[in-house]
Image (cartoon, rainbow, N blue to C red; front, side, top):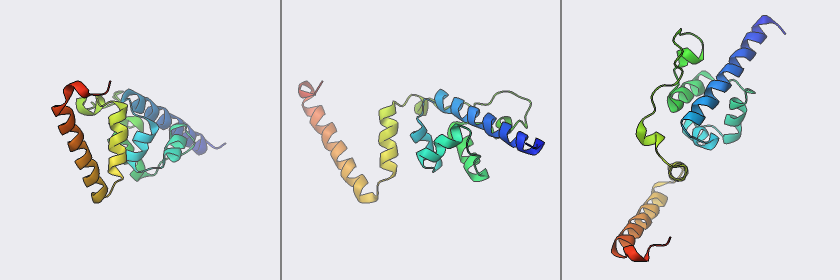
Amino acid sequence: MTSRQNEKKKLVVHLAAAVREARKKAELTQADVADRVGLVTEVFGRLERGHLLPSVTTFRRLCRVLRLDANVVLGLDAVKAPLLEVPETEADDPPELRRLVRTLRRMDAAQLAVVSSTANAVMRHTAQHPDDQAE
């Protein structure tokens, strides 16, 4: 293996570890991140395991989604603070809500209208019958 290939392998392994650590710290699933970045979950999994080096565009989206400092991940900054602050609203979202939002993002306008009407009806019904709520 040439020194150039060795450097590339080290970068891929380092990037994979940084992405996995950031994803876990943000309490996101691989599917959550893949959807937000615009990748198929299986492709993101390969990237996170160090079997794939992302394109520059994908790397940029990964950094944005996972609040990673690209300079730190690439070893271009002496400061060792690879994770940026995660907004509390996203960090506090339960996995069920993240999955629902991921599904909603794939819907067209008509599907969103149906879901919105249904959610509003459920809220009206539960507000009128608080004792009848399922446990």
